Length: 218
Image 1 (cartoon, one colour):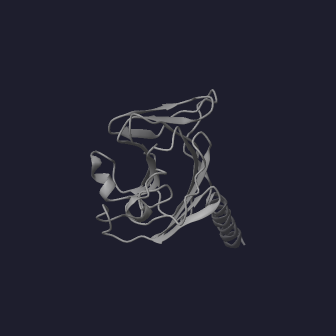
Image 2: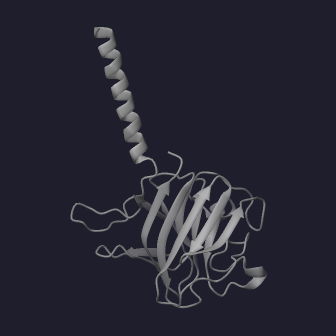
Image 3: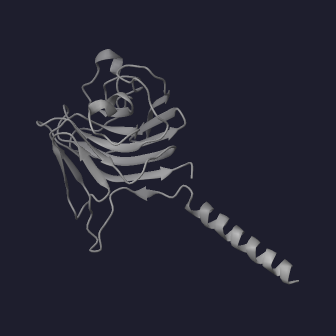
């Protein structure tokens, strides 16, 4: 009887652990955390390159200045995930992007050749649109330009599962692509890496907020 009770207890602990893991699987992570006073902080974020970022501690809005640099979330890498965020631009010529699966800690500009960028640049119609908002930069053009006018918030939803990446902008599916390399400037790519936000130039500003990631493989 004692052996059966011990077995039942162990099984109960195991099932509880499995249930707890199931509840945390797919849990959304806020990449801009708050401190003990409830203020937003850039804790966990690092910056590589020229330029800088300002964070409003009350609203959680990030503001990019100068560049070309990368603000990247250094706490952990992500494999399969859904990334959602809002952005707005100061004017139509504002240039930025969201990097996914940056394979290593950025210590040079080399990361741009080994990770894909979801573009923000409305005028980028050259080369068939592979440099336009909604594009996988230098690789795959969007089906349409779905961005809102300057000064209005846009919502990106970027999903990476294996080699497939889908991009939704303001509720419209604008890109659905199976990653390949080499292509364009991309020499190769990883299936796991860091997430980063680009600050690109000095004469325009861009803002980000509500940056959230939902891991899909844990």
